[in-house]
Image (cartoon, rainbow, N blue to C red; front, side, top):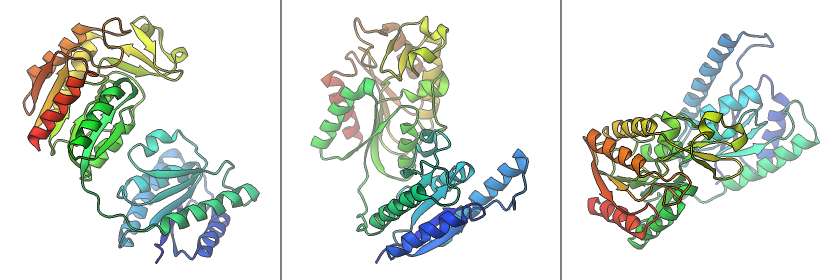
Length: 374
């Protein structure tokens, strides 16, 4: 039997779209219930504060209504929105369990990376604005209905066994491959996350929802974005969410600040050692003070944990270019990080090794330390 579809939309402004996409879903023999997130302005132009307050209330009401009508495997949640609507729908979807299927037809009025960072939301660009009906919108809605029908008829997944959470990045990727393979060889599944200022939010949410039996947080690069600079989504529990499971922490990527394309970077950063990771990203070496501050913030978060935690410090280098003749190589920075973490340790143990983070012995040691605690 097909699952039901909850259609989240502002009926006040999207009646034609709702009528069409509802019929398209019914043609696939799906059951459709509408969650109306209209603000109730009746065309009146509200000031910003009044509008924001109404948006907050509408989001809260929608989350409550969806909670009251979910059962079994839960419905598929389908949203259709323009600028304000997409903002509200994403907030509703993020408040729902991660395992629910979520699809959003949107005009993409904002950079979606931060909005969907911690959740699995399928984005369907409407291309044209969602005002009335036209051939382009009908085509988008017809294909979306087919997509939702396919999701609705999937067999329910068996309850998954917790995996080992892992964080990685291009500048630490080789170590991630080594660690993953060793964990697989030891009989564990691995779920990896891209620690680029957004992926860590999903890592933390998975931890909160019990998806991990343990974690190797190998790439803590996001602490530099949180404390120093760089694009980063809000994730206050990035380094504390795993505090109730056995975990190994490595300082992967902690030696650099991740900034944008080189033409967009302030000159005071370019006065430091740096290199172009790609056309879109430039990595700038941390200062000693920034490293101390980042390590202090990381230590404070780790000290909130209760489960066994070990911080493995590969003193031969923290990332791909932190090596002899590398663009941002700096043994002193590594020493600052290690000493700060050691002095601040209350709920974790610091283990130093002389190898680089890419060295096989680093992966061997990380996995060995984790398996010891399991």
